[in-house]
Each structure stands twice: as structure tokens, then as C-alpha cells.
Length: 518
Image (cartoon, rainbow, N blue to C red; front, side, top):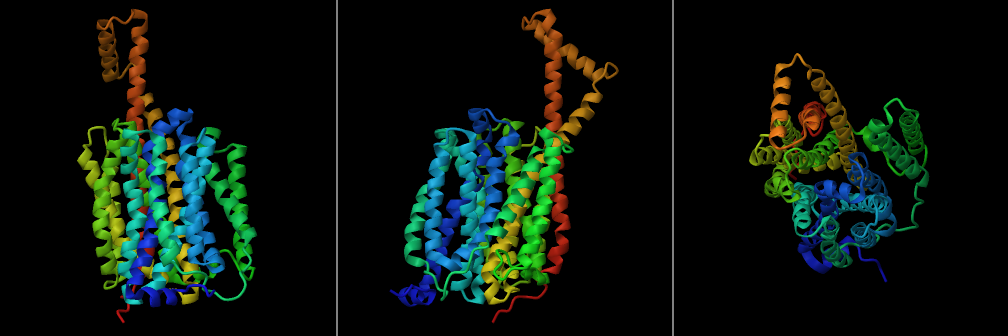
């Protein structure tokens, strides 16, 4: 029986087919992306359940993002070898199985492994969805279609924490992994009907296992080294060895990919200046999206003592606004220069980051919520234009590789963003804690008066005299840590803002001309 191609499906379903295919891949991507950030509001519960620290728990987020990055490199080969339909259906089947394993995980190692599998599948699905949309829509409608597709990519991380908070409040953290199952099952049924089978004639190409292993090993070594730097010491043999191994592996990967006939990654697409600039902006886009989604719930739960539900609801207005803005931004991307929209988005997110860099314990719920909304408006504005500008610059035969690479760049930024912001938070908290502690001397009248007041309160509460001084010092140390932690968050948001300012340079380079309306 002849495989069902895109042309066959258009003949079968008519012009409506492009929307059938788009909704199918959007649902699959949404199921995968919701679970990417839904775990962020569950960190305190998971850490308590398994008795692990933040450095270990962050792998639930970093591991999934790194696996997404690697999964995107496999996408082009899977589509070429097996077709969109089989790749989509099998990938979602594995994804649903990984969700079940995560929900039943007996320890943190199994949970991290399940998260890595989920991330790898999400990495396969995102460029597959983008590739499908570019195949079924004419050039003058791709921006609008990318706007709808971007809803699934960005609404997942935006709404995931909210849904997670609701589920944790009503049940427990294990149930957050079951949310994506019904959506995944519906996507499998739709994908079996609306996605094309293998359209390329001839034998399947050989998979570049050498390149895949080199890239996976390099990325895993670097992220492991960065995440263990605080605990093991940045100058320890373990950390320096991992970073050195990553550098060697990366160099070997680049050399290998440039010297084989069928590379895992066609690095020659970076010869196109517009595509390279778009990839740089996409990387910074990932830092902002996933880094802020990691930092905000952690801050409000750790220092403002929000419940998981409240911290998730903090991000909900941003998700709603993003859903409204995304199709509008897609419509505009077909009519305005990509550079204009991308720069507007970068400026909006940068302003939000500098706003959040002023956080303190008295900052209200709605002040933080509006700051996050402003950032998501920026991301929604730039997302469709960024994708269209990147892929429009490539030849048709490079579309699948380009779709994988632009998503690869965004996820790579996300993986490093979460990891490096976690490191920045730890380092700056330690720095401010040392600085504040050094000022707490007998010559500091405010400190002396505070200790005296606390001791008096403890005495009134009936605390024995020999424990009053220790109790007052313990209160002071907790006060110092809370202030240092707050200042660490401020510095982390400031770093994000500065990075977005520098992103204006590649944004100026990409997409200078207006899109062709023909």
C-alpha cells in the first residue's frame, strides 16, 4: 500500500487539512511542554519526599531541558527515516510511559531518569511540529501559523506551574505527571489520521551515532560540572575534569560533523548570517523563558512562603496574556520586518527583568505578576518572527535541519540558563551572606539592639536564660540568610536583563528586510 503523503492528505481532507495537522502537532507539543516546567512548583515537596538538596533537585529541570536539546538533533533523521506519523505516534507513546514512571518513582534517581526521557521526547516533537506547519501552510501564512504553534510551546511553560500548583494542593506532587496523559492519548489518535507517512523515497540514511554520543557526553559533562561546582569546589579535580572533558568532546563533535557525508547536525546552515543571528537570539530567548520560570516560583515559595498553588497562579495571568498575544504576533510577523518585532520583544523582557531585580519580601503578588506578564508579552511578540526569519533564510532542503537547530538553540539556552542561574543564585547568596555577616559586630548598634530585643522576647516566652543568647543569634543568622537570598535573586534577575540587552546586537543583524507578501 502506498504511504499517505501530505499531498494525499490535502486531497482527502481539502484546505481544512492544514488546520487539522496544526492542531494535532500543537496538542502533542503542549502535552510535552506542560511537563517541562510543571515540576518547578513541586521542588520543595520532592526535596522533602526524597531528602535531597537544591543541587540535586535542579536536575529535574536541567536534565529535562538538556535531553530536549539532544532530542532535537535526532528529529530530522527520524522524520526522514520513518515519517512524521510514525515518529509522532511512537514518541508520544514513550512519553506517556515516562509520565507513568515519574508518577510512581520510588526514589529521585528514577524520577530524574523519567524526566530525562520526557525531555528527550519533547525535543523530538517541537521541531517536528514546526516542520509540519511549514509543509502545510503557504509562505504568506506561515507567520500566523507560527503564532498558533508558539502558543503550545510557550503556554506549556507558562501554565504548567499553575496546573502543578492546583494538583499539588488537591492531591500531591506525584499527580502532576499525569496531567499530560489525556492530551498525549488524544494526540496519538489524531496523529494516526492527520500526519503524513514517510515521504522520502529510497533507503534510510545511517544515523550518526558518533556525533550523537559526542554531543550528549559533552553537554552532560558540562552541566554536571556546573551543577556540582558549588558543592565540590570550582577548582576541584572533579569539576575541572568534567569541564575539560566537555570542551574536548565539543571540539571532537564539531570536527566530526564537518567531515562526514550525513552529519547529525548540518553545521553549514550557520554560514547563513541571518540564521546564525536568529539562533543566537533563540538561545537568549530560552535563557529568559526557562530561567525566569525557574526563579520566580522558587523565590516566592522560599522567601514569601507562597503555597505551590499561589506560586503557580502568579504565572497564570502571564500565560493568558501570552495566549492572546501569540496569534496577533504571528499575524504581524507576516507584515512587519522580523527585526522590529524581535527587538520590541527583547526590550519588553529586559524591562521586566530589571523590574524583578528590585524584588523584596514586601513586593506584592500583583506587582510580581505584572512583571512576569510584561516579560511574556515580550516573548510572545518575538517568537513567531524569530522562527519565520530563521527558516525563511534557508533553502527548502535545509528546513528540517533548520527547524531542529533553531529549537536546539532555544533549548540549549534554557538548559544552560537554569543551570547557570542556579549557580549565580548560590554564589551571590554566599557573597552577600559573607558581606552582611561581616557587619554584624559589637560596634553595630542596630545589631546589638536587635539581639537585646530578641532575648527579651524569649525571656518573656519562658525560654531558659542560658538559651536566650543562642536563640537570638539563630534568629539573626536566619534574617541575614533571608536578606542574602533575596539579594541573590536580585542579582540573578539583573543578569538576565543584561543578557537581553546584549541580545539586541544579533537581533539587529537578523531579518533586516520585510517579509515577501507574495
